[in-house]
Length: 420
Image 1 (cartoon, rainbow, N blue to C red):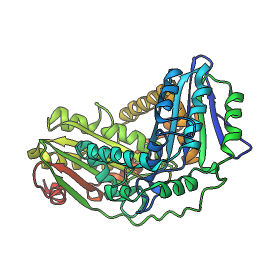
Image 2 (image 1 turned 90 degrees about the vertical axis):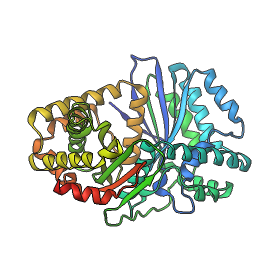
Image 3 (image 1 turned 120 degrees about the horizontal axis):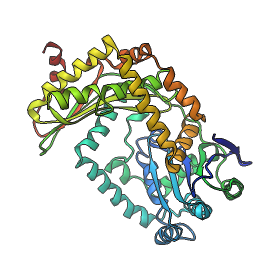
């Protein structure tokens, strides 16, 4: 069972111990992500994450890597829409040294202008890499379309134009605002001495600002839109998306199970229909994207150009069937077992458990016990699935994006699928 320790400086440390393992994972979670940016700072959260590895007052970038290698650690960072996490996993005896290195990175990074200029080029290459990977690019496109009018529309990487305007001054200003004590959570899982962990963080984090700045989120009304990118590629990559729910919504667990049944596994309806029976796609699936205040549900397929209309017709059919008839008791039972098994397996990995603890506390201010989560999965009914399906069961609600090698009118194809 997870436990919360409140430091005198105001930061929460979330711990879950397992003395049966000989390792531990620790993450420093920060309320810094693309939703908190504006046009002038777009991409700065991710940019700062990169700069944390580029040198501190007492360590060069090489020394950071070497010091982590000396303790056999796996370490990295990730930036999302609403959070940034710096993490390390290593042996129990070395987790305290790993935590000290992370603290040095997060608190003492230099943000040297010369290094900023070099790392900007690295991120520009990262953006190019995404654009060269159609199934990655299309996710950014559909996210922007379905979230138009709310801050989730902003990409994590930023744009070449926005990155060009980010210098040392802007980076430090944003860092000082977002890296505040009431916007930081420390999550630790595995085998460790919590007193040593608390002692490490208590004094050091006091140097940060106490409070995050006021943040007012603007969420405009949803409207359908479409985008098609034509490139020299052999497939048409289709992504369709409609508004879903947040992590905190009453239908969250129903959406997880509905997704599993519709397109989340090899036995799912979309996979069996479009790939196994019709042979239209190699990869077809559905996914949920959740945030603390919003979310969307999306369907992806990679198909031959000439199969675009046929595939969309089958997607419309499966959505309509789901909205009208719901799911069977057998399908729901299978989905519950899949979800519970995946959830339990993830918690048996110290790093995955740490990610769950940190995300839940930072984004939802909640700690869910294993039993509570399993009970919520078990409590989902067929009627709950129908309620979820009502929100996403009509293709006429969906935005659409395609990255393709052939000119096409996606909106027209989607609308015409009603009559086929």
